[in-house]
Length: 226
Image (cartoon, rainbow, N blue to C red; front, side):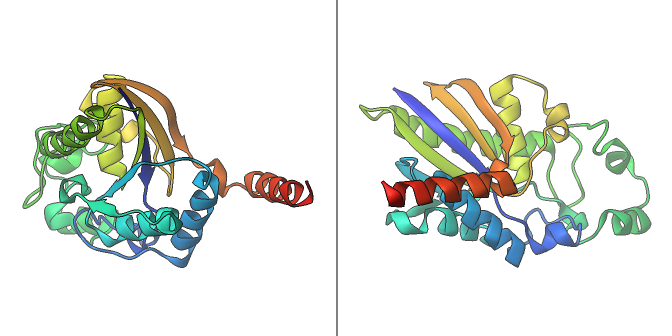
């Protein structure tokens, strides 16, 4: 059976606005982030979704709750879908990291020339991120591949997590993950046949554009008048 994965990044967070490394750090959505999630909810309101999963960080949970709140569905919390652990960089801006830690081996290689095995002090490497995310995703896919019918599932998580999943689906190296754009509430779509992946959409945030909102409002008015 086929599994369609709607892979969604959380809305804008306080960490994003302040340009801080907030991997495991639990930061809230901004008002803008909440609005972004509401617009994505409108975009997906007619899309049938059989199950929803998200990381245990509040920015992902809150986004998932907003997008799927009116469906009467349980949101399955999967801690392994968290963002990469930035260790001693957590809560610091890029400039603060440079001033406090200088240009160490890992910092020199990030993000342009990544050593995927390098570990941020007290954090984790890209390899470790990949291992935990891939294990969690495979468990989710196995669960839904066992069903008799094709299913659509949603995962709401983080930029680094999504980039790892897309890198594996596209069969490109993990050292290229930061070359994949991921905007707030970006929608990515991957079709899985068993564990063979076919990527249909990457970093689509059309629902945040004015033209999308206008076309959606026009469609709603047309339906009312028919």
